[in-house]
Length: 381
Image (cartoon, rainbow, N blue to C red; front, top):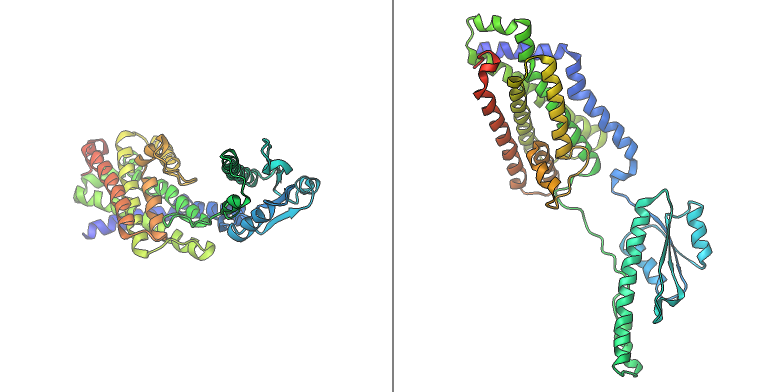
């Protein structure tokens, strides 16, 4: 056991002396997270405040529409203006994101068109305004069809139309909370960057065996009175500690500096261990299929980047059952992002444990493949 600790300490000191490892494992993910959260600004605070101007030529629909957008949706800058020109001018002068124009004939039997004039610099708000106008048109058409049916049926008593006036508002806006397993913006970036660079740093520690093989250090260890199992365990433990320490530093740093919310400590530890195991397994497989340290670094970088992008460390993968959703399941990053999301939200322990077990399984399979190909590592088993 003393030999294992000595080999582990030797590798850890080597990693600490290598400043590039510290930059890759801690400095780079923390710096990128800080930069991206600073650039995003209020977008990560969950605040979407478009500015709308509504002109209603009928004088019947506009007030309730504005009230719904302000009271129900929580939009702070929605105004009902007297003229079409005033609404359009607000968009042209960048005072409003979009203008919703309701024509005078919307309540008549003739076909009319609602208009949305959007600011070219605010596509998201314009898209929201278009959706509001479409919903408004759909509800208005339903009411017109109902009224036309009553008239066609010979109903002439005005009291028969009282039901229409008692109908719900033309458009009803319901505010909904995000899913309990969705990370907020800052935490999403913090988790994503930590996992993305974790695979690079842990793989680099595992692939250190190739450097020692090239330099002859590994051969000297093999002929020394040291068990081969001790060599393997010592190097494995050093790689694991490198990844876990890096994750711990990033969790604390992003929590204190950015206000990231990682959730329960036990969940963070479990998922971090699973991530390190998967990264070690992947690095071990790469060590058996590459001949030089340069080749291993290039292959490792490509694989880690593809898995990170596929797993959604930079942007969420929509869980709609599409081909990308299914394909992303082969990436341990996807399972880890879901696990951290459940841990930071109100997910159950099972929602955290299951992704962790899947990632541990991925690491175990990769580690098993590496053991089967151990002869490529000069018999270090």
